[in-house]
Length: 420
Image (tube, rainbow, N blue to C red; front, top):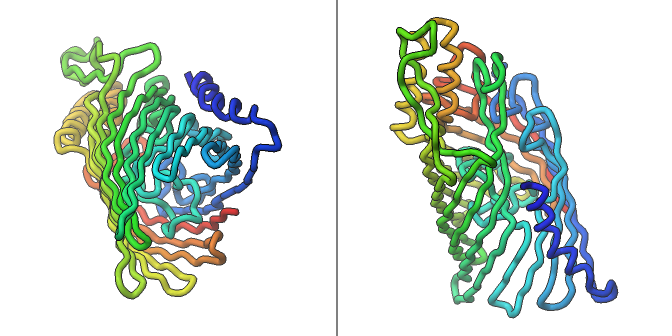
């Protein structure tokens, strides 16, 4: 599936390059972030962050080529290297963008190929750390969508106004991606703790409206996704009944049979960034997703608010972010977790695995940081943040025999980002 999608994404660009070389105007650019992050806890947070320190959480490098064939036609390809999306130990080189653009006039833009979705305010430029002040975009919000890249088509229309320019963008496409799970005591295939990655095929369509001026930006979007698993059903729930022999006297939760071919995933997004007096800027975003499956904790909302102050080359900021699964999902996680503690030891790990599969989220992050802009395209960032988890948080790889809930995690981040 991935190879087919990649070939489809590159086809428009390759066709565009068949135009005679003398008619093509090529522009090269690049970007990168080298980031070091360390926490005060021995377990991993956000896949890589622990008291060992890591360069993997925020480091990414990429290059982009833009080819202009005429006033109306152009093409873009962007490649990047970053930690793998289907392994915690490997790095991955991938084609992030590969699309052809047609602009019949100043008001209309049509793109076809592999495109980044216009979801949150910084989704499209999330890999380019030199385009925003934060050391790290709030994971509580920016991780809600299963994927932000699709191979498909987008159409946007711009209306110029006296105070704001209005942009409406509609898109549709599909992608192959992975969803990461972590079992604190065991995985689906092994009897030891660890992560595994479930392949998912996504189809997504959406409509986004953006109002933009020189100082302010507002955005609202609705995205309708369909998730399916290659060659199998998805969206199954849990059964509660007698455990397998010789523990039939006890009751266990287990994944039920069946499911559906496609799982509906609606997502609502809201965002605003407003310029205030005295060089202050207030930014806030909100996203909400609904998923009806065993991983019911993916039905959650996330939001953050951040205040930034420009002082010459410095941009200190403070932010607060929170994400929470539905009360029903968190309550169900607690019931499975409580049931596990009442079972004999041989069954306990299989039941904590069932609890982990529900993928609960309940956490908040307070961050204090600053950016120092060395040039207009290079920036050094430092941040101290404290993460607090409530019932549980699937961002935390809890140690074996314990929970991800009721944790305090202090994180220090230092990075250098550039673009050219």
